[in-house]
Length: 157
Image 1 (spheres, one colour):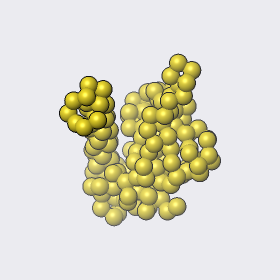
Image 2 (tube, one colour):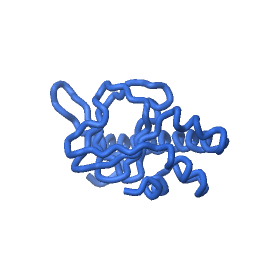
Image 3 (spheres, rainbow, N blue to C red):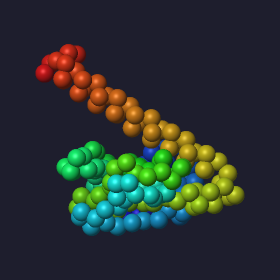
Image 4 (tube, rainbow, N blue to C red):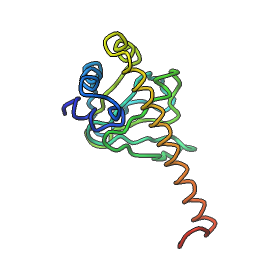
């Protein structure tokens, strides 16, 4: 998998020009995972942003002794914006379904771009806000659909 192509397909590259995409791709790492391999355990600390480049990554958590699948990432999606910024623990785990590949970005790597590309860190952080708002919008929609289904209102069920 080409890091440059994976980055181009992500929300991180939305506002970036070609030189900025190349500079960011050069600073990103790449991690390959086997089926079932855990990228970050629930409650784990990891101050990296992860970008889904190939395969599938599931968000999971332990719920009273039963594993619950919360979400499965799509190509180009990112996870870890909050941990990237404040080094907070993950409230869910991340695990590969089949063989997967993720691009990684560490805070120091992003900061190192300030000298040659002074607007790039700002543009990436702006993408973090868009990622977070997209996640909240999806969760709000899912909550509304579930509520309508349970209350038998707002739709045909």
